[in-house]
Amino acid sequence: MPPLEPASPAPSAPRDSAPVLRELALLFLRLGTTAFGGPAAHIALMEDEVVRRRRWLTREEFVDLLGAANLIPGPNSTELAIHIGHRRGGWPGLLVSGVCFILPAFLIVTGFAWAYARFGDLPDVGALLYGVKAVIIAVVLQALWGLSRTVVKTRLAAVVAVGSAAAAFLGVNELWLLLLSGLGVLAWRAIEHRREHGPSGRSASLPVSPWALALPLGVATTAVPFTQQGLFLFFLKVGSVLYGSGYVLLAFLRSELVERWGWLTQAQLLDAVAVGQVTPGPVFTTATFIGYVLGGMTGAVVATVGIFLPAFFFVALSGPLVPRLRRSWRAGAFLDGVNVASLALMAVVTWQLGRAALVDAWTVGLALASAVLLIRWRVNSAWLVLGGGAVGWLVKSLSAG
Image (cartoon, rainbow, N blue to C red; front, top):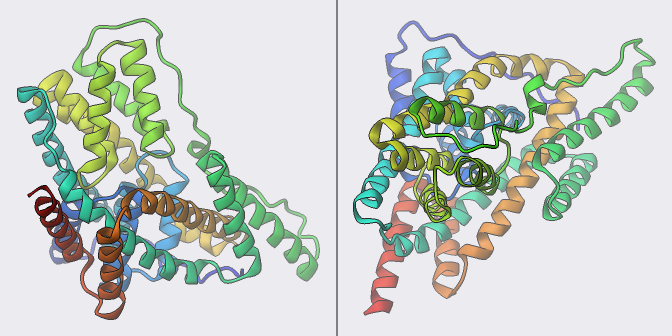
């Protein structure tokens, strides 16, 4: 796969930045309110808005930012939103897009946590999600199709994509897949480059930032009393070192908060993760729920800031480097491999989501109808998500009646 054209450099804030920041704020507030389905769905919704509709980015630029987000720890879809804001509106855009994507989920999850603390149970949203999940499958598949035509253009890319998907199905760690795919494409390009140009006298260095190799760090094994400062530091560490899906987050939280520190019960943790999964926006707002249960409204704010703050920091460091990476054939080759693996991982997650979401004739029909509306009439995906929720609620209500 030949290196893509260099992405345009990240802009500084325009002289009249208010309209740009307002656009970013309105877009990511809406996405944060309607983006159900986890990171794969969030990425698909962002691609629909910023590539297909607004044309703020080319598909090549979008997948480069997606690859960069996958190489750093933290919530990938949130980091992609922050990257898009930085590319569109400079440093103010970075803050506006990230905060506006997180804020609706923070408010919704805080409402769930308040009800949970007051009534001791969670509201039933199964009927709503019954329809929403089916629509999300169509949205993600459309995004995968468009992005794959941009990324998977050669036999090498196809081989890397198939290998990455197979390894993901076998349970290979996501970070290892990204790194090995990047290294594999880099090695192949280095061989081709040597054949064409001869030895350059320089080794093909690995363009990976140091934090891409970070691993979860251990903490004290003795129970400690709850404090707001301890809550902030714990979630700051989680946001700084955690790779992987919500299931990885669940394992990390269980190890620390339930088994080591004794701050939560197993049932409370499972309820917190369930809320993070069924509400729109970032799954990492699980931290918001936990913070509220442990420390009220102050705890919710402290935990949310702690877990998301590293994402802003890492994007601020890595974002300006993406165009430079693309201008280097070595770094560009590595990034191409990471991009292919990222889409393969997204495809595997979509398969898993599809098996859980398409459970009967109603959901299959809703997914097919959504796909037709997306492809044929280019209906806005946010309206489809809301319509799917309404159809799901209606079908479940009729079935119950």
